[in-house]
Image (tube, rainbow, N blue to C red; front, top):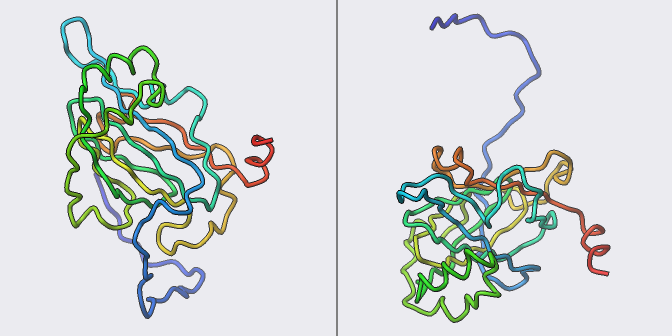
Length: 211
């Protein structure tokens, strides 16, 4: 590999500045959230018990987007980890914060139901997410773009679909194709199908779908 250092070419002036103060982010709260979604992490294995692939909500990257949040909205994502490993969840174009992590009881029963129905509500997740609450570490109790999801837990995540650095609305059309993604931030797992499309929509689209 060869690096050639050339003189700086003339270009537009740099008008960037350092802000006088940082953004004063408010604590995360589920109040004002327009929708709750269940995001479920699966690990599939061979007959020999070795991992073969990982899915989110039982779907591949190539399957149509099922997460279609409104640009500028706040949602609550209940992220359920049915695998045996920790997964750092990463969303593109959003900031989020874990506010609660509750261990699941009768995990094998819940897994068996989810394998058949792939529907947390139909599998009565409310009756399974009843064991001890995990302590959210101080470094997780802030707005981030990735958050740790412990195995065997349902982690409640507040998601804001605004600019990550300022919290302001997007200065571009975030609903334009091809859209964005969310995934496990471990590269090997992301490449092994633990990734899904994320399609932001405008308010008028949500109104049309609602009625």
